[in-house]
Image (tube, rainbow over all chains, first blue to last red; front, side):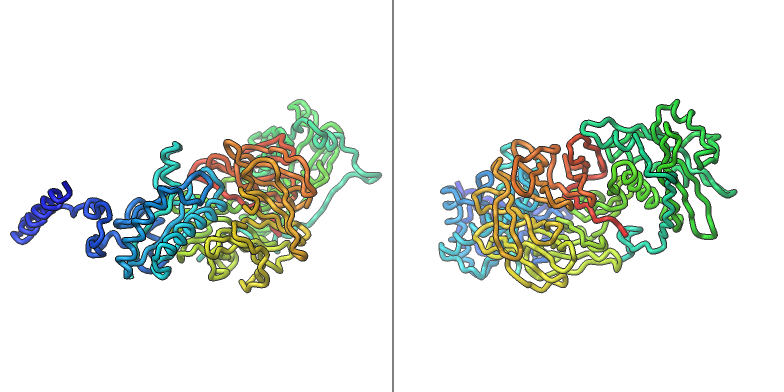
Length: 187
Length: 434
């Protein structure tokens, strides 16, 4: 199934190039990052990611973009977010499994830098959630390092409850917000 | 950046020519009304606020309205008074001395106390004279003459509200002050800026304007600087905003999630800094040099608040599992746990009176709690989070559903301060303005 899809994307790609070359004025948007990225297949490398997916290499610029709303639920390329229990920074088995895959990609793309963001749901006070987010980010970082990822590839930041992925007051939304989010970083 | 109007500026020229015109030529004034409102379960005192009369020829009704509006709002906010607002009464006699006041008229309106005064301009200076009267006894209880510029009118009103509280409760009120807070108002909804409000909740201005996340404000003792936490350069880092000079400066190039907190004498700053996921408390000089590390645990230690004698810090720590409030003697380093009820207690604020600490308890929703410093049963003040004490130690400002509210320490009065315009959170009540 995957091969068929990739094959049909290939056809579309050729078609788009043909259109461009032929000077056709109609513009089509590029494929969304998640479709290209798929399930984090190894070997895609950083060429598999649109430039839009990479945050600036400087912390200030990157943070500015995040606060403005960029990369809330994207920007991690093939790296998948992990989620936490209420008030906790422990890694569940599911989180460890996800991080195993993430670690593999990071090791194969050791030239790519990533920022690990710790987030919380709204059901805590502001400052404690900032500190808890830092704990979550650190827990993920530590685990990736034990899996062989180079510490130099990783930076961490906590946003506490300040940049939620969703804003509904529901358990489903809160669960989405109790997360560590990955953000690929330009050099 | 332009300095904000009024906030924290040393107002030398509000020369309070203190004419405390107590009538008691004999002995102290025996004010029946004084006792009533300080009783446990006391009712509110009906107090009438008359228009300010022009004492010279020109008179702007707007000036009177502004003064009486601020004064009436402060009196209402205190929770001690039922304000009878007669500030729109036309034809009110200009009399401001006991002999020239028709006390019966005020008694007929149900007032037990009366605020009456006048104003005039001497050149560019505005002079406001205002007095407090006991209606039943037809006596003047106190009065003040204020001199300043036209733009100081609101502060004059706040100061007289504080005076009224001094005269009737024995303690100076807290209204000549500011509250700093975090809000997303004026922005995209995602950004947060430090804002200031006066105690009417209507004079709101932005301190930071960098479209970033600016959090956790706290005041220095002269109330002209704010310590806060900002993501403006990444980080986040602790910063200091200088209200006189205008503009912020990073306190220290180290990541931390609480704004720096000045000790009561201003000689030290307590701050929480994060390394390797652990947040620890540090003592800094006010210019950002690390003097001492206060906690060394693999955990979370945040939100320091000083005791008024500068000897102790209360803070939030998860060293016991979940977040609880602890008290540390800064000299000895000795730490004891303060909160034992509930599994989530954060955001402590130490009362300027020294005996009580307010904090946020999460149990279902959020609750503002107070607990005696020496240990004991906590009391609930209101529903909300992030309490901060008034300079007189009688009130706590906090946020509830994105609005700032003020609760009196005895729990008998909870009033709204801000609402609308955005989500207002994390308030910090300044010391009294000088």
